[in-house]
Structures are given as structure tokens and as C-alpha cells.
Image (cartoon, rainbow, N blue to C red; front, side, top):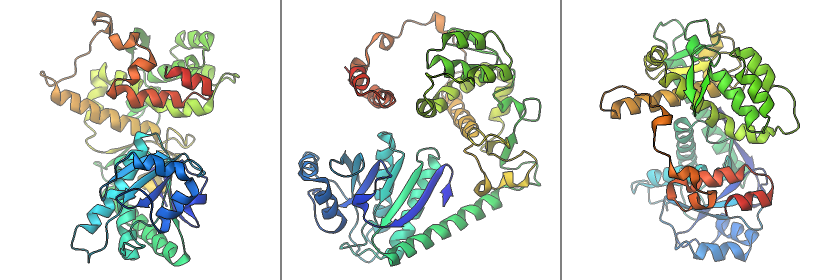
Length: 412
């Protein structure tokens, strides 16, 4: 099953031998000191260092989750969660089991983990019926992805035997049918008030959502003709291609900007760009709408509609389907990630919150040149790491550095 950008699947096997994910989940007991079943197998495979780290965590409550290193396991992290003991179903077992999945996924997101493997939590010695557990599990995971659609690339259940796998497979099939039914019910292609709004060319209806739309804005003391120019400028600047950056700033033509940035150069690191491009584009898109009231009104008027870039060619920023293709209304048939549409929806909600919280009930553009210097700009990464609100951001930055020495130096 695929939901949003996330592939969800099952495999039969031993979770301690899965080497395709960044983290595995341990169905632990409240002490976190090891036990039987999956818990014992994970501790044995990881080695005594795992037990030593678990001792420092002081246990874990039912439904909660804690994270450790993986040591000798073929992954980077182990997330320990404590499932509920089955007591007939009337003691909040379903809620607690759902919390196991949601808290494990939330912890993974906080640590930048994009692939994770679960066992069948609570269905061993805790006696939770497998059919009920599978239903709770897939709904909990689906609910999490629905709220944070770009958080994971892959979520796997690693199941010990074929009968359990068959039950989880069926639960995923039912979940996929429910999602498809919901999409088709909520999106009416014949309605002028469809809950999905598609856009593509900048000169068409809702063309202002395109990065090629001519909406000028300022960012960090620089003036941009459109958000495509902003994106391409930052793409080459990230890899110290200053000459190309100057060429991009010398033209407001988005096609030329894209062509300049699309040149091959040895410094380009596709993995780093993949990790950072969404955050970069979001800054430009937000500045564009904040500083152009006419198109801001259009964005805010879309309510809670799903926004989708209907490019038949772009499977990263768009949905990979033409704007005139009826399949654009069925998310399950999309061929692309729709990153630009997701950015627009995030910006839409952020701007609504800012408008609600402002005294005037509107956005006020502030010239950055008139602000007092921000002291954090003068601090080192190591100093910023000591401030809680910057801690995860600094680690996320250090993770983009491939060289171990560079990574270590960035945190000192």
C-alpha cells in the first residue's frame, strides 16, 4: 500500500536481521531490560551495550516509546515501546496500542528517521488478538501519515509467520479500500467546489501557485522575480557555484533560471539537495505570498482544498498527471509526490495562524534591514546546540555532512 509518499508493506522474517531501515521497533516490557519473544531476540542480537543504555532510561510506561542506539543490529536505532496486556478489550487496550505506534513514529520523526520496521506489538505473551491488533496498527499508522504525509519513505511490519502476515496484509488491503473510498467520496470532478484544486502553467487558473508565476518578493536582502528563481539560486549557492548564482540573479526568466541550475557540476550532491530542497522552497513560497496580497487572497480562499501541481512530467514537485486527466482527482492513482502542493498547503495554514494571531488581523511585511541583529547568527553550531529549540535543527544539519570529521567539527 502507498499512502502519500510512504510505502507501507509487510514481510515475513526476523526483525533483528532487517537491514533496509534506519530503525526497528522493540515490543518491550516496562523495565526495558529485555524479556522474551521479540524483546529478547533484539537484546541478544544487539549485545550487552543495548542493555547498558536501556538501564539509563529508567523504564517506559505502556503506550509510550523511548529510543536507543542499535549497536550490533544492522540498523541505526531501536525504538522501544510497551504494548498493553489484553484484558478483554475494555481497559483502553486499543487506545494504548495505537499510542505505541504513534509515539514510536513521532520519536522517529524527531530523530530524522525515514524508514522504520515494526513487529506485531502485544500479540505474543501479552495475548492481544492478532486481527484486532492489526486493525489498530494500520489505522494508527495511516492516521499519523495523514497528519504528516512527508515524514516517512517506508514503514514495514516484520512478521514471524505466514498466518500473522496474512492478517496484516488483509488489514492493509481494507485500509487502502477505505482511503480510496474516502478520496472518491470527497472529490467530485463535476463540482465547481471540488476539494481538490489542480494547477500547472502560470498563465492558467490558479497559476499563481506555480513557481514560475511572476510575483516579486524580497528575501534576506535580495530581490527575486519569482519563486523558481529563488529555488534555483539557492540550489547552486548551496554548492558554492557563485558564478551560476550571479547568472540566475541576472535573469527573471524561470526557464532560463532552471536551465542554468540544471547544468552538471561536480560539486552537486543530490542527496543533500533532496534533504534540504523542501525547506528551501517553502521559505521562498511563503515570502512570495506574504508580500503579494492579491495572490495571498487566492491562496487563503482555497479553504482546506487539496492543492496539486498537475504536471504530467514532474513526479517530484507534481503528481505526474496532466491537469485535464480525470485521474488527477484520485490520489491513489497519482504518480508523483506533489511536493509543491504540500508546501503550498503548509504555507496556507501557517499564514492563517499568523493572521489570526496578529493584532490587525492581517499580515504585516517587515523590512529585515530595520530589525535589531539576531544574536543567534553570531553563535557557533556547538553553542546553538545547547539551546533546546535549536538542538534538533543543529543535528539535522550535521546529518547532511558526509565527512565524519566535518560532522564532528560542526557540533563543536
